[in-house]
Length: 299
Image (tube, rainbow, N blue to C red; front, side, top):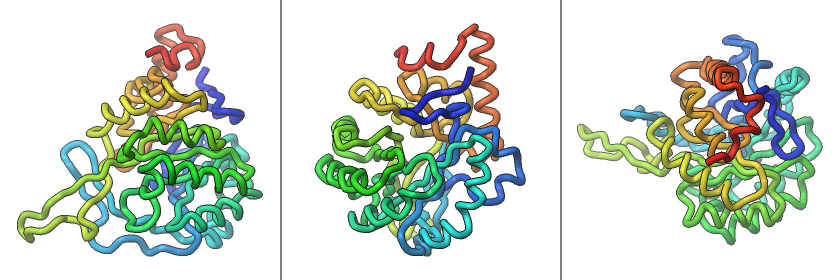
C-alpha cells in the first residue's frame, strides 16, 4: 500500500530522513529498516569544520541553521559510514548520498568517486545557503545549474536527484534545466535564506549574518513550489519543507510529490518518520485508497 516507484527505484514507503537530520546512532532509537530511505549529511571532497559561532537558532515555528556543511570528507565517509549504511540498505532502506562542493570541479570529482559505490542515489545539493562558496550559488540561476548537472551526469552512473533552492530566481525553470540535462529526479525545497538579531549584542545572531530557515513556517511556500514544479516536469519529485505529520506528507503527495523528506521534525521528535508512515497508512486504510498512486498529483 505504501510502496512507491521513484524513477526506477522502489521505496518501501515514501518517507525519507532528510540530509543533515540523521546520523550514526539513530539506530539506537528505532528500527531504521522501517523508513523508506535515508539521505546522508552533505558530503564534500575534503573534511570541513563548518561555520563558527551559533549554528542553530529556534524561531517561533521552525529553526534556522548555519552549519556550513560540516562533514568528515569523502574518504572517511566511505571508510566509516558507508559500511553501516550498506547494512541498512540490505534491509530495504534506500540510501541517498548528498554531495556538495565549493567548485564545479569538486562536485564532479565527488560524483565520479561515488559512482561505483553501493548507494541508491546521489542528491546534488545546489541549494545550501550557509556557505560562502559553492552550494546555493550553483542553484540560483538556470545556466549554472544546467552546466553542473550536465557535468555530474557525465561521470556518475547512479540515479541523480537535484536538491533545489527556494531562493532561486526561477525554481521552475531550474527544475526544467535539470530534467533536460539528465537528472532522474528532483528534491525541493532546501532552507530559505533568513536572518535573526541578538538585540543585546546589537548584532546578527549568525557570524554569516544570514542562515537557512526550515520547519513548519516554510511548509505552505514549499508546498506551492512543489506544486508548480510538478506541473512542469515529468521526472519524479521529493517534497521537502516543514513536514511534521502524516497530513503534511499527504498534502505534498497530492500536489505531485512521489516521496517526501522529513528534516526539522526529527529534531523535535526522533520518531517523526515512523509516526508519519503510520499516519499515511491509517489515512489510506480509512479512506479506502489502495495506493498512493491514486492520490498523487490530484491537485
